Image 1 (cartoon, helix red, strand yellow):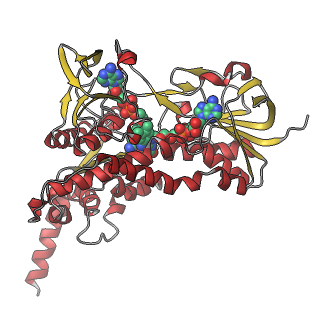
Image 2 (cartoon, rainbow, N blue to C red; image 1 turned 90 degrees about the vertical axis):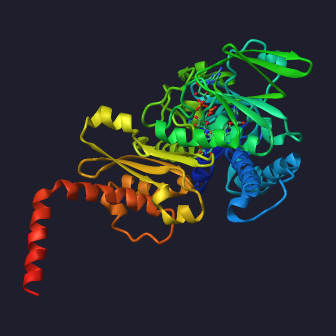
Image 3 (cartoon, rainbow, N blue to C red; image 1 turned 180 degrees about the horizontal axis):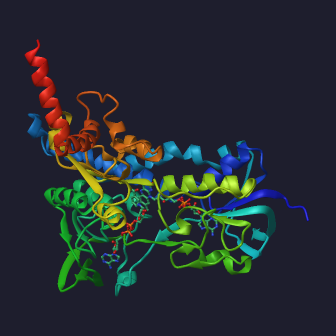
Length: 475
Ligand SMILES: Cc1cc2nc3c(=O)[nH]c(=O)nc-3n(C[C@H](O)[C@H](O)[C@H](O)COP(=O)(O)OP(=O)(O)OC[C@H]3O[C@@H](n4cnc5c(N)ncnc54)[C@H](O)[C@@H]3O)c2cc1C
Ligand SMILES: NC(=O)c1ccc[n+]([C@@H]2O[C@H](COP(=O)([O-])OP(=O)(O)OC[C@H]3O[C@@H](n4cnc5c(N)ncnc54)[C@H](O)[C@@H]3O)[C@@H](O)[C@H]2O)c1
């Protein structure tokens, strides 16, 4: 039986929009179903507003601390509503790229509505039955609200409200010390809120290299952020307009609470059961080809769990386009997935952690660590906290990298390129790095393997000593 569409995409965010534009540009017949606005979390409540708010907060911090460069100012007057106004302006500037008009001009049929699967082959929206050769579920995720007694009654903020606040909460408790909690905790503190971060683990940013996370933690504390480690928020009560939050045996009194304690996949209103699509509380179950348990239905982005990043949703979208429109042969490859947390200092990672590398390769690994303090450009800018740590096999194959420090999210890309193309770590010393740039942190880290191997090679050292002695004697 003929169908109307090559592909129907449910959810128009980072993943769904990439599928839609690529498929339409390949001349496929495409429908995109979106329940609210195109753009998804990244544009409206995620990457774009958080990086914009972080930038405003960094400027405030720089101004406040400019005397270390001999520049004296009065303390900055932070107009919070203008800082969030800047955030909204950035969103408005980027939004046309994700607009329905742009997608319609590419040939995508954009349908606004919240639909459901009717059966294995049909998605119904606004009373219309959409039949397609393939479907993609890319409905993203939403904040997980932890089981804290009284939280619903007391009220709280998530990433869906914080960027449109007009008034700065004088004090803010941030529940969760993952990337959202650390980025927004630092931004809000630098913009004038008194922030307390509640971290369920001893280590903030628990998915990161412990030494690297410690560098971020020290900066947060130097900023004045209060961090409660190894504790969970348990109960909240409103007394005289203030929120009293019990964290273990401690009580903190704040004006507002930001919940940043993880994400849940948006699966529930889709009637996935009717389509034979299995899911767990982590997300829709997919195979390596990103097919769900119904082979005609694919999943990509946050809704399938895993790495919840815009660039990963985009990568998965490319795999889905190939498999859904043509022959399902492409497999998602998660070996070289980078990400960064945009606190100051930034923390960027690709590949294995030191522990994962040791678990897999035993002691046959090398940990090449270079502090930013030995990089002249970092000294010039007094941004010397942090390091690059590159983990390799003894032969120099790059297994992972962890950078914490100025512009770490930018600097990691040459390592990603080397790793993806299976270049040895020596490739990072094989190109000339411009002096003085922060990127020297990578070449200096990489050079350590050469130095280490030379230091171990007594035979070569003796031979060179003899050779130079001979050359001197005959000159
Ligand atoms: C505060 C914050 C900061 C972040 N910062 C970064 C960052 O710096 N870098 C980075 O890489 N990632 C970042 N992320 C993560 C990133 O935003 C997500 O990984 C990314 O948006 C996931 O894309 P997606 O397509 O899966 O979901 P989304 O982009 O959220 O898109 C899902 C879309 O589906 C729609 N939808 C939901 N249910 C339905 C339904 N039933 N029917 C129809 N449509 C539906 C939604 O309205 C939405 O438009 C951040 C996230 C947050 C919360
Ligand atoms: N820069 C970026 O790329 C960026 C920025 C923000 C978010 N993100 C994405 O969004 C995802 C979600 O971020 P997130 O920070 O919400 O989640 P997360 O899962 O990474 O961290 C949340 C933390 O909160 C803790 N927690 C849970 N309940 C708690 C409680 N009651 N009290 C105290 N702590 C509690 C969890 O143990 C966890 O460590 C990230 O994993 C990432 O993929 C990316």
